[in-house]
Image 1 (cartoon, rainbow, N blue to C red):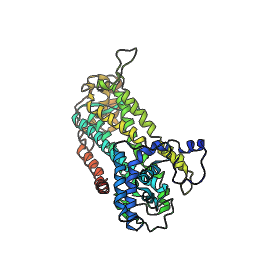
Image 2: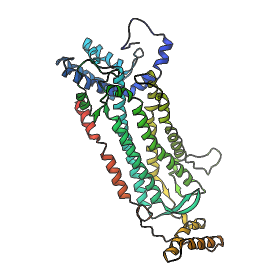
Image 3: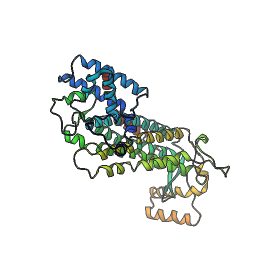
Image 4: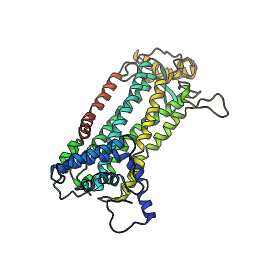
Length: 444
């Protein structure tokens, strides 16, 4: 196997299999980011005289060719090659000879993988943010569409007070705005440049870390080289915490949807193409998609703990333990994105029962409305409460379903425009355009 660290002895094959693990598989996801990082690094190396002016365009041209191979999905890590870093360097050396061996000056695989993971993560966060926004917009649209359709609100799974589908859909939309704030914080932690920290202790070469920070579109660098290495695991933990915030919103919404779709509730009707049947009961239309969203999102909520347990007893410096984080962290983006896509599709096609309140079993939820009406007319609240309670016990309570809630965030004043403005503000704070412009310039 071709290794950047290879000397004059051969590692036991079983040890090699165990230590490499699934790393080459995970590295395929990092390939194009490894190439981008190398392009920025050698541009900086030329500026400090470690790569010749005539060599830089040749190296950049070949790295762009490798990048295109990655974009086409044709990049492979050959059987006898240890990792993505070795593969890229080997491809350069095959084409360019000794010139290709110069790209590793002032760099370690430690800061190389740190950089690759940062570039990968900020790209996947951008994708995740856009998908969350799509789901948010679907929820706001449904909230406005059904703002006047009342439904029971529950406490302790007991019919409690009037709610509405406007409130229900809108509540999950606003929950996503809080999740978006978490994603923004995670993105800021991610979008800092570790390149130049080498093995965690810097380099005797006069590296220009400010230059690579700008070339790659980072907000800042991780200034302290020891902290740059300490950030591995911390970034993944914080990003996964933001992801689990989204997952928690989806899981709760999925549980509601499963409950409300059941015959005993009958509040919503899921699109038939999104349900499955029973092998024995011909009447069944099972909400399998929402059940799987619930399970997948509950599983995702364990991700920060998995990462914490891999890293929390490690002292300063690099350790091979960190390799295992890739296996739990990197695939999580696809799983969460898939859940969001499914949820947005079903929410868009979900139908609402406009006649829930025709059923008299829900009449008691208007009891508080009657208590408040009596209190507003002058009766002491506690006396009004007792009177309505006695009427219910005697079967004499008559529900007045004509309700008028006006305060901020209530049935009659959903504040959806304000919630949307908050989401717009959160979205604007990512400044994705800065990264897009930097990457475009680097690859031009």
